Amino acid sequence: KDMKVLVATEKPFAKKAVEGIRGIVEEAGYELALLEKYADRAELLSAVADVDALIVRSDKVTAEVIAAAKNLKIVVRAGAGYDNVDLEAASARGIVVMNTPGQNSNAVAELALAMMIFMARNGFTPGTGSEIQGKTLGIHAYGNVGKLVGRKGKAMGMNVIAYDPFVTDDALFEADGVKRVASVGELYEAADFLSLHIPATAQTRGSIGYELLMSMPKGATLVNTARKEVIDEAGVVRAMTEREDLKYITDIAPDAQAEMAGKFGKRFFATAKKMGAETAEANINAGLAAARQIVDFFKTGDTRFQVNR
Ligand code: NAD
Image (cartoon, rainbow, N blue to C red; front, side, top):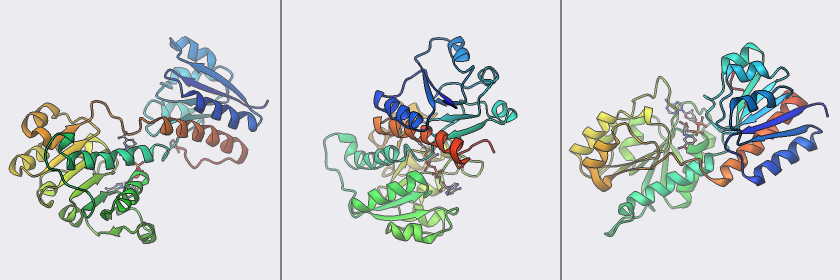
């Protein structure tokens, strides 16, 4: 066996995911080692000592862990966010770090659709609600999650429009029957439901606030499964105070949660804990993708998903 792959998970993968990972690793002729529910760092430090590749979930891959892993060539974070890996320490040793983008997109997209219906039906409380069919869905950023929300929105009979200045290929929108709009202004102005899928960047931070919300149609709902940082919370509070028809639902609790909950009642909802990617399927997909990426890296030098270039 020429390579040893360690799966180190404080919170283990589902059994089915581990079996799948083992299948992929052993099929490639490599050895799989498992360290699950480890109680202290020392166990991790000794387990990484002789491995060539490491798969983790939210586990902290610190400079200390990297220093202890003398043969380490690649670390894959099974999941999207990789702030648990010390990229600098890895890069200094020439270790490739990857994430597994796109593997939880469907889970997040399904939640976004569910959130629209939940708000349209008064938070599942008595009273006359409304339907999402025939309404306009605005998709802010047409990436992995955004495009799945677009397709699902179409399937629900919605009129779907989208804005993403970084997608250069118009055919991508056309293939989904989604109308591309040329500006953020045009998007919000027409959206009965606005689903946010922008990443938090210097450009997007605090960019969704008063002006955009005030431009939305009567009874509009803002749906946030992206990041809380993209919201200008004071602006949202001001718009929702001035306009009692606007609604906001989010998978990422705002800093102003107590204020929003107190002022807006059923027009506001935040999940108790971020749950967009919390499905059995997403966890399995991410684990299998991590194993495949490691095999592809060793066999063909594929570094498509590297995050520390
Ligand atoms: P992605 O990278 O596939 O897509 C992001 C898209 O945003 C890209 O198409 C990019 O062109 C576009 N974009 C970047 N800057 C933009 C701007 N200024 N204006 C308009 N578009 C812009 O990401 P994704 O996988 O679709 O994830 C989208 C968001 O969802 C991320 O912020 C991610 O952190 C979040 N997310 C949340 C959960 C959850 O549990 N709720 C889970 C996964 C991802």
